[in-house]
Amino acid sequence: MSDEYGVDLDEVYKVIDASDVLVVRFHIVPKRLLVDFRTRPDTGPYVGMVNPASSVEERFRAIKELRPEFPQPEKVMSFHWPRMLGVLVSSGVWQRIVDRFESVGGPDAASTCQAALEELMREERREVLDAIRGGEHYQTLWERKGA
Image 1 (cartoon, rainbow, N blue to C red):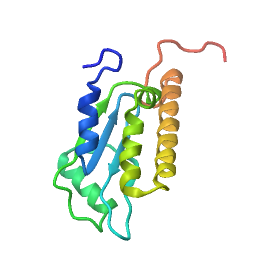
Image 2: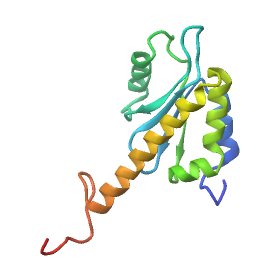
Image 3: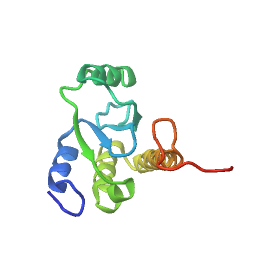
């Protein structure tokens, strides 16, 4: 385990490299990043945010609905990222995902990954602001007086 990142980066890299379908769970963002590296001549890989699943069966159904042109994956691999998204980038984990995605999706795949990262960062910022402001599923430690 890396003290700096809170995860074993070698193990995370193994999961990224070995998976056909990858789900990344985050510490702050409730949505998940789904990366489906499978391709067909007419269909490229997929990367995007999805809602959490309440069971493995639900996750498989959601993948089938999202990618009906593909058979059910044999397995879905995942890992939990316990830090902010900026650390996912600075640690090299994000680049590992992008490199693998580009290897199966071609040169335009990098822009698809960048759009997914930007969406994740917006979601993370929204969650942080909700936590500060005492949003829907957060409770503040103080209340503003006389606003």
